[in-house]
View 1 (cartoon, rainbow, N blue to C red):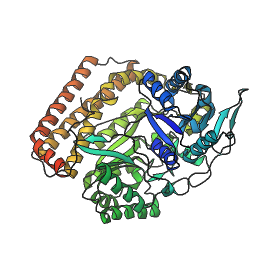
View 2: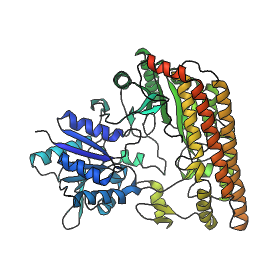
View 3: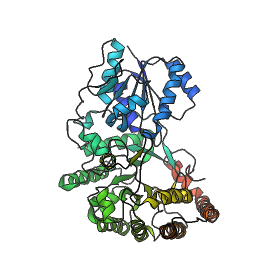
View 4: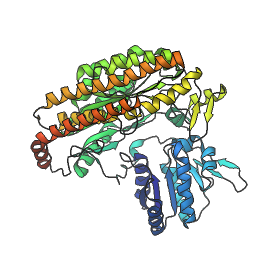
Length: 535
């Protein structure tokens, strides 16, 4: 008998985790409804009441939203929803005890890869059978004791899973549709700030598993033909190109994209480590549609890379960026200007490094502070050192230099117009993303060379303002224990850069509107030419 399951989570760029869970449930004949966590609570309550589900599952991606998930779960309970509540995700898997304490409304936690654990749980509930011995669960006894069952081994063959249920609407980039896809699960490296490797090492089975290239491309072709998707965003934790086996696998993937006739029809983005970047290999991937590479550079000094256990050097970081520039591939990067080892000297060396890689305007400058999330080695290290602060929701730590604590908060507030939310650097990088789509998925556009030059100069200017602000304020704070940020000037400059970006971008798109629309119409792709992240 068909049973309804409601899955609640974030839906940015499509939630493939929920998509796979839903696909396995639907394959067994269950009805699945998916809700966005940020929906109006009353509307969500009404829809769940109408669905009358046997289970509500919460996809808790970020631990700092635990109180919000708990508040929503309590609202549903107060509204009469008395079915089984469960939660899953990286944090609940690694810290199930903290999750059950923070969300007492839960009946269980589904730990680690949840497709078959959730399916078994649903079918036990549907049949009225006991579920407390199911592999991969954690739950709280009536007396308050927390019980975790035997862990379920990792899925050996990812190609046995059905295609994820794509319940979400595609993102749009100049009328082109973009959706996520997955080629592998797991990461072989052991960065200290990341819970991914601890997640996959916690359960029996192989840490990194790849899908067969032919199966990946078959899914790409299916999604392209049925949903009009021409931009694929690979959401792999680390695109698996490590060593001879990884190189052979990704070369086969590129060849298969050509063989299936997709190389001229779709483009794709990956996230990978810098030590995978080689000119010959990435040129081959570029010719098969790769257009954007995200790399976690994280630090521009050797001590920072050691603390973060990146197992690369500053020179290798720079070499990877130089290769991508040389072969004409766009890049974005992650960078932790602040980590537990940060000093004022390391800030200056990090900014010097950032000037070397993006001072030319090749990408918008971004940076953040490393946070000690649940399940990470660096959280355990900070706890041993007595430096771990905050709580489960917002973990924190003190810097070794006391003055750094005040400086970080002051700088973060001063430059939030660049590095937070829809800040300048993120808007600039979205504009570069559009350029990549224009160059690869449209015929030659008039004035593109000039627009590219404008965008590079604007990016260089914006990055320069950000770098100067960091360096000058760091020097002042180190000498005086404080710095007066020219906040009004910074805000005015940010608004001016965004205004120039928007005006030039819109002028360029308007000039080429006929070509853009004709191209979309000829390929039967509907949709407005909009850029939802630029405002």
